[in-house]
Structures are given as structure tokens and as C-alpha cells.
Length: 367
Image (cartoon, rainbow, N blue to C red):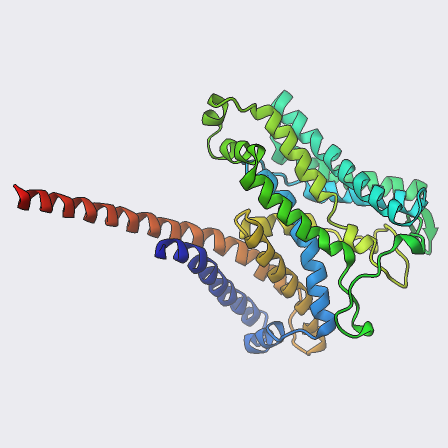
């Protein structure tokens, strides 16, 4: 019990301490004060920033869950970034077209986004099971293709707005007001941030309480044993990649349908890129577990939102230093889990050896 507690708590604590020390070294290297840096970063956010943390965390959680579905069976879906870009564009085009009224327009847009993400993710899955193409290579290439494809469609079929192009802004009845726990000027928690909770619960249930989840975990741990027990690995690869892509399709939807005064649409200036890569880091940080992913999402969102305060606080450090912190956290936690895992294995071996020696001594006394 103590060993499990140590593995669950000690490794993240060690990783965070190491990340703070390394980041402090970087801050000193660029000629700033690490004390001032951490004072700003670790200050409790005001109400507006607190809501920003929650909203950002919901999108990061969806992204990390999409990556974790693949990781569970040793599939490295690096293409979350491209999948949610394509899906976001499809959803924005349909929702902006207002083909259906109000809530129905939102629901169908969500389903279309999931279908688009799943279809984009099916490409590397099919290449892998039919041609043996590594999903790492194909998904990276598809990320680049997604950028050019969406850019081409936006440039040729989008509305002209200033110097750029965008999809048609959503009608007022296709926007969701959100929840405002503080004053109205502080903003609101996006309604579709609830998707993160729904997806998190569904992910836990499917992985831990269904035959599909068992097959997924079994294939990830030992593919040969899974095949021997009747699992079709090729089928599992295609299904899990498509599920991963479907969840990736949800990533940007909370902000697309959030009520704003400037209008809701897809354009290069409002689309939040790189959430796919952030999700991969958080999935690794959270050990592909919904609770761990949730905590990791809040941590990354907190660091990201707080970094915007560095300039206003007069700290002479670029907020990009926080990206260094996030990267170091992922690196150190992988190392920390490995170190703690070896320590736990050695402790268990010592305990077994001591128990065997004790049993042998009792037999000798009995003789």
C-alpha cells in the first residue's frame, strides 16, 4: 500500500520540484529573478483568469484523452493536432450555414466534428493495418496536410473579413451562454466545457468496465497474448484510432459555440492551434488515467494563463519560458516514474526475500 502511494504521489512531486529548479535556472540564465517569476506564476488568479483556466483545461483534457486512447494500446496518435483542425473547420462551416435551427444545429455540428475527426484518423489506421506504415510518420504528415487543406478551403470558400478569410459567423441561436459563477464582467465557463467531464467518465467506463476496454488494454500490454485470446489487432487499431480522432474532433468546440460579442467562426486568427501537442504531453503526464489527465490539464492551463501576467507584472521574462516548464515537467515525470518504479520493484523483491527467509527459519525450528 505504501509503495503504491509512493508511486502515485512521490513521482509527480519529484518531477514538479525538478521542473521548478530547472526553470529557475533558465530564468537566471536570461538575467531575471526566479523569485519574482514564481511569485507571479504561483499567485492565485483573479476571477477572470480562474475561469480562463477552467475553460482552457477543458480543451486540453479533451486533447489528452484523445491521445490517451491510442496510447492505451501503444498507438502513438501524433495527429490529434490535424484531426481537431479538420473537425473544427467542418463544424464551423456547418454551424455557420445554419441549416438547422438552434440546439439541433449545435448537436449535428458536434456529430459532424466527431465524424470528421474519426475519418481523418482512419487514414493512418488503414495505412498501418494494410501497408504497415508507422502511425507516427503518417499522422505527422497528415498534420501538415490538414494545415494546408483547411487553409486552402478557407481561402477559396471562406468569407472575406478584413485582410483574411473566415467561415460564416454563427447565428445567435447557435451560441451557448455558459455559466457565470462570478460577476458578468468576469466571463463564464463555456457550456461545452462539460464535454470534458462527459468524455472523461465515458473513457473511464469503456476502459475499465467493458470488453472493448479489456481488449484495448490487453493488446497494449501484450499483443501476442491478445491475439492468442482471439483479439483482432487490426480491427482494434482501426477502431481505437477512429475513437481517438472522434474525441479530438471535440477539442475546439467549447470555444466555437461559446457566447461572444465578436462573433463565432473559424479563421487563422481565432483558431487555437497546438492543443493537440499539448494534449499528448498531458496524456503522458497523467499516465493515460482520467484523474491524472484532469490534474495535468489544470496544471498546464494554470501555467499558460498565469504566464500572461508576467509582462503586466514587469518581470523581464518571456512567457514562453512557461513552455519550457511544461516540457520539463513531462520529461522529469517520465524519469521520476521510472526511478520510483524501479525503487518499488526492488522494495517488493526485498520483502519477498525476507518472507521466504522467515518461512525457512520457522521450518528449521520446527524440525
